Amino acid sequence: MIRPILLRIAGFALTLLAVAAAIFVIVDVLPGDTASVMLGTSAREDTVAALRAQLGLDRPAPIRFLGWIAGMLHGDLGQSVTYAMPVGTLVAERLAVTVPLAALALAIVAILALPLGTAAAAAHGRAPDRVIGIVSQLGVAVPNFWLGLIFVLVFATGLNWLPAGGFPGWGAGLWPGLRSLLLPAFALALPQAAVLTRIVRSATLDVIGQDFVRTARAKGLAGRAALLRHVVPNALVPITTILGLQLSFLIAGAILVENVFNLPGLGRLAYQALAQRDLVVIRNVVLLLAAIVIAVNAAVDLGQVALDPRLRRRR
Image 1 (cartoon, rainbow, N blue to C red):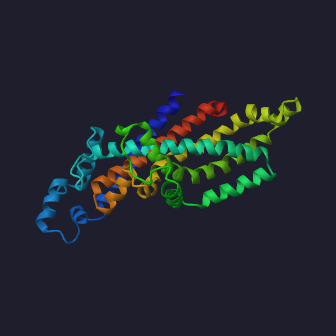
Image 2 (tube, one colour):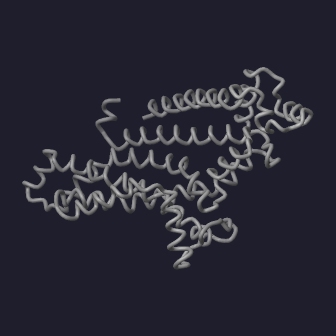
Image 3 (cartoon, rainbow, N blue to C red):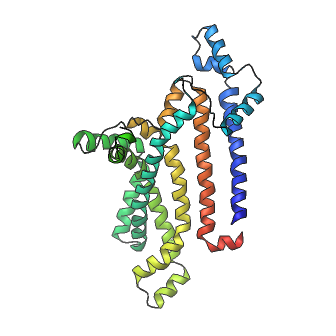
């Protein structure tokens, strides 16, 4: 198991370096004069020159790239021009909202999708299977920001059960913070729960048709016991793969939901930085999101090896 972990770490580092180079070229090199892009065409020449000196744009592009990488290795992500504060501080503050939001959404996805998909497979071809299939198809088709707006109208404005937006901060207590994240978490989770429900159903049906399940039933094992003891554990490999990949999507896809609910998360920071042309923040946030996706993919791959003995023998 040590060798796959070392290979994944090396692959993670090389992939992240390639992604960082691509981001640097797109954000810092291709636009031309980065200071002019950030300040706009109406900025005064002396202001542009001052920002150019602040960002070190008088140095060659490879030197600037190596300086960016070296700074990240030391925890220095640069200074935000818009917020006039270190980017690392900004990102840390916003992650304290985005990570709990994504974790809560992932828990909702698992709680909804696993039993629904298993129930649909167990009732294959009957009414419960068709109902769950129709509902999951609708869930796949509905965008999460539209669900967020509907939730605000129904549960916040209409019923006044939950806040319509904003975040009080974790200093106000655990329950107030979680309460403000419930609606956006459900809006973020329901489309992904619909996708996972269909995958759980398909994976469970594939395992139900295997010879060892038929043998277990022929020996007298009841249908529900065979489902829980033999079918579900063997269907976990593709399910955990998709569930792990959905975590990276929930983190990276929170931009629209965080803006709908006015949450001070990483997605809203990326949106604000893009609107204000703060390229220093943009390149670091994009690289962080890419690092999360790559790390989750590597963790999912290692999780497959741990869950499936056949993969361990093949390795």
